[in-house]
Length: 502
Ligand SMILES: NC(=O)c1ccc[n+]([C@@H]2O[C@H](COP(=O)([O-])OP(=O)(O)OC[C@H]3O[C@@H](n4cnc5c(N)ncnc54)[C@H](O)[C@@H]3O)[C@@H](O)[C@H]2O)c1
Image (cartoon, rainbow, N blue to C red; front, side, top):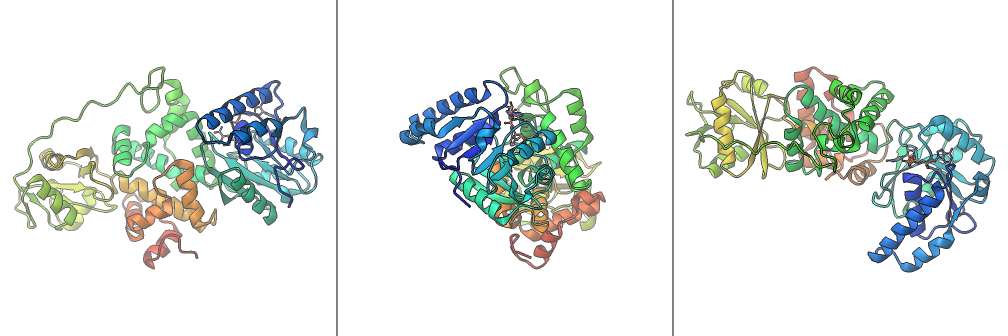
């Protein structure tokens, strides 16, 4: 296929809004010739002014050669209508998210561009196959899904629909690279890759809240401090807007035929219905002032009480032994019938673990050692437990300089549950061949700023551990939400790395 973005075969972009102008900007910054059109009067001119202002800033910051900015004026042509896209090697549409509008646009473009020109859609949620139905030559239709803001987000998903030619996919991968992006090839499926993969983080946090396990503040703090996420799931939902993430969750779950792994909770719907949309409405999971600054931060933690005289560590778990030592609390292995008992379960709630081990559930305190515990550590007890046992263990842990998060009894605490769900969904994406294992990890890191991709996360935690957490969660809750992906199960049982191909 001829090179796209040359003076003879420029890159066409229809729609000069947030995405279209961003795509045009990265194309110009990388030396391509661009034709841009928007049906709204003045929209393309406004986009051009913004693009050149941003390119000028990039030159000032030393990120762009002045020559590329200067030549961009010549390389950008604002079209007066679709007829001017006739010579384009490829056209990307970034118009309103409406299937009928996109179908009409592609049907019209088909009669204008050459037979070998590619037509790509930047849709976030519409099936590419459904758009392609409107045209005669379906093999040249694909998705090219950029992320907002385009100049800062390096990922681009190349969506291969049922009829898309391999050569078209290859050309779009090459085009993505020339635009300075990192392309990943993804199947035409609900939410594509990143929007599907992102469901685990937020919906599992919502389930923890739904069950009354912990507050949004506690869940966010654990995911930041223990799991390395830049934003907690509730901060993130407030930022993207409940009016955006609630419908996206529903569309994707419906697209996967109601899979309970992707379900959100009634609170999510109720917040959307009530207009509690997050930062944009001043009130979501948290409250904000007009500048978007949070105004309901929790009060500082209450001072810790007294450490226990001694602690029973019946499993002699290394991490717990080290914490007791650091706090200066003597530990013993046998039950003295009165001291608090500390355990570190995986995937079990305190109730189940204490009964399985035949420990007194009233004095047993479960401690989560699954992730980074250097800043914060989570504990939980069974219903009806003696509050003094949890107070004493909390004081012991606080004495080591760590923040202590106390939650209600839950299989898998906060961190194990959310990370296991992320890893499981990543494995499921590999199982259904949505993308290659390597691309799943790259896409989730670049598209969502995750510290690790889901398969890397599974390897880091240990596949057998992730499998155990999910197996127990499914057993204890009775919910298929937690059923382990077959991809995960097989590799955990065979002790193979998560990315091992089938
Ligand atoms: N904003 C995001 O975060 C984001 C991220 C990825 C993908 N997308 C997708 O990109 C597309 C555009 O989103 P956006 O945020 O840039 O929207 P936007 O509202 O900022 O811009 C859309 C532009 O398209 C123009 N337009 C509408 N119908 C047209 C038509 N028939 N012909 C020519 N121009 C037309 C409008 O005048 C407007 O300027 C949507 O499909 C959206 O789902 C958006």
